[in-house]
Length: 373
Ligand code: GLY
Image 1 (cartoon, rainbow, N blue to C red):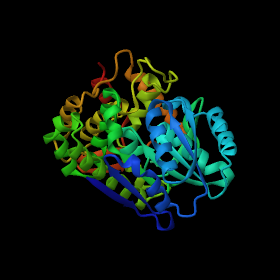
Image 2 (image 1 turned 90 degrees about the vertical axis):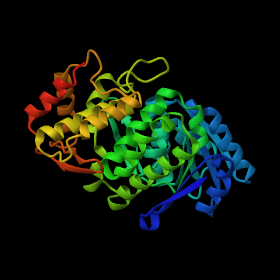
Image 3 (image 1 turned 60 degrees about the vertical axis):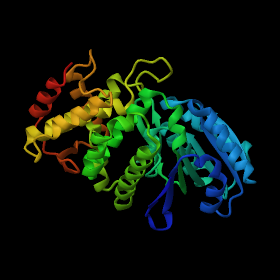
Image 4 (image 1 turned 180 degrees about the vertical axis):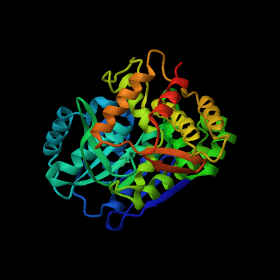
């Protein structure tokens, strides 16, 4: 089963291809999307090295001139030093203005590779081949690309849309369980924002989702790409509407700064929380805050949300040792970095959210206290 979603952005429109075994067709899909291509550089996530090799093989088998460079897995690749190494690799591979970069891996590798593509020779074509659930349903679609500064995530970047996204669902079979579950948090988020039917499907098919059932997951990933694609089409450069995608991320980012892998420099064996795990906690906080603020129109929403997240093995309370006051302080830092005012995304009912700055600090405090573990 193969699906195709078009992200409508005028001359920057592109297709997301979703299906099992698509990697072997990568060369053909790239040729179709970028007809006058000269050379390619595969930027392979070290955590998905075999898929990087498979991509390289597929491109070469299609007669394309392709080289590969490997970057560290996770957030550790989103640094100026790694970007500089990939710029050099572009030169070594003799990329020109008609060349392309192909990112193979998780969301962080896609962000880094996209940033290099946006800047090398003032911008060259870019293809996303996501190999994690989180990258498939979220990070590979939308064109926001960036590296981190030591003190601030995603602080240097660009809007640079991919020319093509190829989500080969076979890659999910090699994904560690915790990472897979972490990706499910963004899937739940998309259902909460725009798709009641998706949320209900996740509730009724929870076991099939956890078992990575090929047919169920093909449908789930396609539905998510449609949601993300539609929001990006409506607001490519995050002028307003796209803020809805931040559901769960206000508290989520604060928790990530305090207890995420980000802070601890990532790495195997690290005990920090993954991005999706922080988002899961943030979703619970947003639902409870919505109830306290009088925005919520569906009283059973917070409980259904928590039940679903628990079913997916995701955390729904602050991690031990993370103090609610510290979360509040981290949110204040985020607020300063984004220009003074937090814009809360609060669920109204499953499938509908409202963006508002009008949230009382005492309600935020009370919710964070409730989430203390
Ligand atoms: N790269 C993710 C986004 O644009 O939202």
